[in-house]
Length: 261
Image (cartoon, rainbow, N blue to C red; front, side):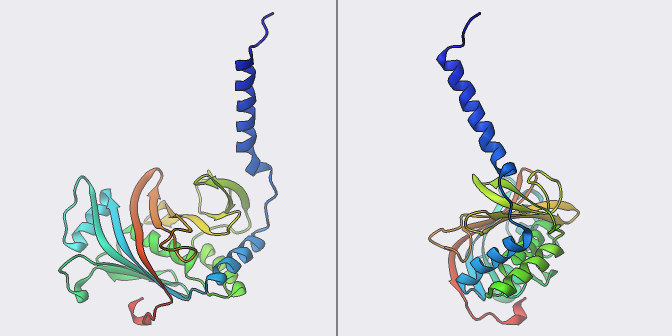
């Protein structure tokens, strides 16, 4: 009988370690959902954010690009469009995105807003990916800056997005271990992902326009947004990127009139 060489043994050992690393989330202890929501609330309360304004760039692809381009009076290039934009939020539960194309008067700027889940606006409010970006980001960020109030707002906001709060597991997102609320990471159902170490919200999968759309908050801790706001918010459908808002400047607690939402 031929003994395996050291290379074969090393390969098997590496494969075993990889399998253990993949299995780790399934084997580790999972906090109960109320404790996860409470920790999220405490994390958000530390920022003291009541309102926020982020200016940057909105990019869209495919059908979403056609709608954004039409609203802004632009043309798509290779199925893609990009336009300066401003994202605003105000606690509780109010978010707005406004396009800022050059030369367009303020009164004519396309916009969409959400207030307690209800969508309104002009030019953008019929686009499912825009609705997903607003509703999901609002559920994850536009919460009261008080730990108990934020935890309650998270429960209510995620519940409105269809997340079954009785189910929780561990998974991975962006190379990090995350709590998964609503089921398991690969389930085709509404899910919320929360960073296991920092308790930043990472991802919310929910239904908009008849499809499950995946809103991802990426780049926490960037020089632009720090713990206030992620570097970018993306909306995906399966593996296709539909929409991305990238923040270039973030202002904490500006005075925002209720009338804009």
